[in-house]
Length: 258
Image: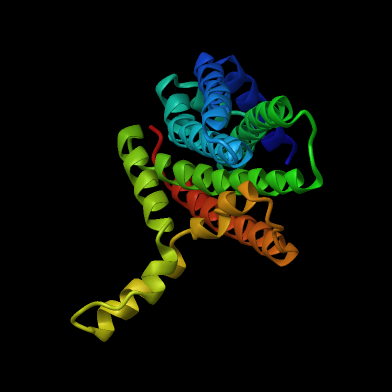
């Protein structure tokens, strides 16, 4: 774990030096500033507009970072041939993958906290004070971070055996499909084919259920989030990430790097 931590720290440092991250965070903060202007036009719902646009900006920007940087975590090391020198040291392949995952998650956490601070600053500017119901935003932001962890794990898995372009396509496809998991479990085809219904239901349990992490609407209106849902999403994200990382480690351990 110490070696994986060293890889994670190095990954975080490299990501921090990347100017793309600053541009994306700046764009997110700019969207929140625009939300203030839009909120002033929307009389009576200024607070809801700022919360909704702010949470959406955090989610979209975080998703872009998770996908486009996540798919290059392995490929970039191979392209620069720094991976070969690293694996020549007493660093196992699974430790390398775990470190890369932890480094990008840490990067996302720092950027998410920065954007969250921007959101609360925008609310403070409009309302001049924060209320207890605004704490629900922290739970929504936490759920966004859990969702991004799943995306990073998937991006890392696909980057272990495919090119960055294909990894982006695969990760994006899984993300979009994961938004409709509940529909796949309840939707019945016109033909009423039992085999097709069973197939779709089976796929719905294999795909990551991103719909459970979407509480932005409730957070924007100050609705309390059940504690059971917090525990459920935390356990689900931890278990799913662990399974995906185990698969990624198995695939990467058998890959010929010569």
